[in-house]
Length: 179
Image (cartoon, rainbow, N blue to C red; front, side):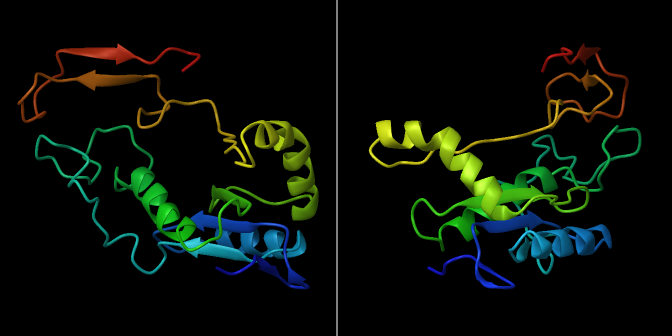
């Protein structure tokens, strides 16, 4: 149950990212976390790609987790978006209760402010809730406007239950703009 560490000793927060493959953008993230006063902990780089979801493939109809030709996904394996949360869950179990954790995308995030400032703002915003709940600090999510696991294109094909999905879809479901 370690305290978060950084280049000058104890850091303000633990910083995690998930990556099942190397990308040089991760190096930029790691350097920006270091400049912000922490160390980046990358989850899944060694075993993320080979790991399997506990309940099986993303596609229960037998299509597997691999993105198929014609599917509008921007990654090779549809299960990666779920795997990153499972890897984070395992890492969180090793931390003390109420540890401050920052979980970011591995390839398109850079820290521009010190971790201590991020934690200070979090405590100012979330402090009243923590106090009202007996010291249980809330989880705050910041995300982008999309509706994963649905593609960014705004619609998904709907196939008949039990179909092999090789034929045309019955219809297309439009993702609401505010989803």
